[in-house]
Length: 304
Image (tube, rainbow, N blue to C red; front, side):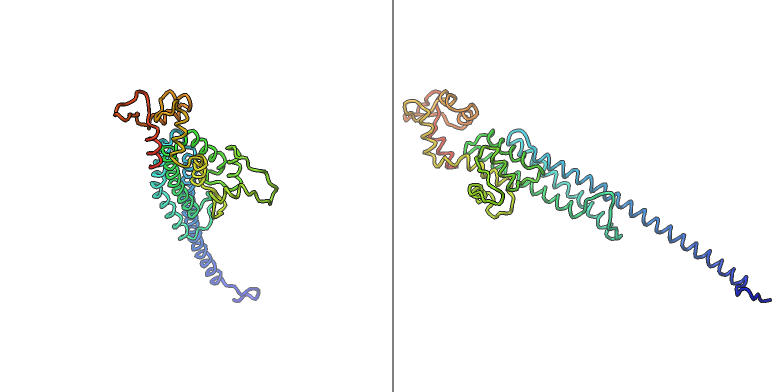
């Protein structure tokens, strides 16, 4: 009969037991699905991290290689062009990383303990590296042009470039104002030491030329243009150069000999002149042995 000490019956207990077994099985299925989802998410995190970390390492190494150019200006230009082409070829790898990032967002994966890099950050760094490659190509072409037209020696250009790279600690391709000031001092500029907060008029005048919009940085291109202009600022016209060559000759001749060039100039400067000067021909049309036409040389240089 009925039991006054409980309201449970065997039928009720058996139903509860069966229902519990069903709930446990359903929960096991749910937990198995959730475990699979989390494992798939973690695998996706690892795939993204592996690709992102490798891409960031490549970006860092490529930037350093581009900034550490060596050899002649032509060698550096060719190497920079190759690196720039390599940067553009990696656009496809960046696209794969972006696709992985989109897949993570679709699965609502907002954290990744395997990497500190994001799709947006890597895309920005790639774009900056691409822009740096184009700026460096333009800068090297500018240096080659300056060397060929103005006579600024390759050693001087190399020294300017090396000094810039020395103070560009983060390999960003630009110097902040304090780094730029230190760079100028290292190159021999006598800039006064002022108290913190005080304005240095001489340095401000330089910044007016290299950073007129005051964005806080001086790019390699701006820096090299400034240094080249300083190297050539004392030469105002072809007549100045002609007078300088005329002062090296004996007897106020309209030509200069190789011996006179090597006696008064460095070997590099003399080689530069001889390679570009035409042999001198007198009014009768006869060439003068071992003589070079510095008038024609200076005029053609300024016309170019």
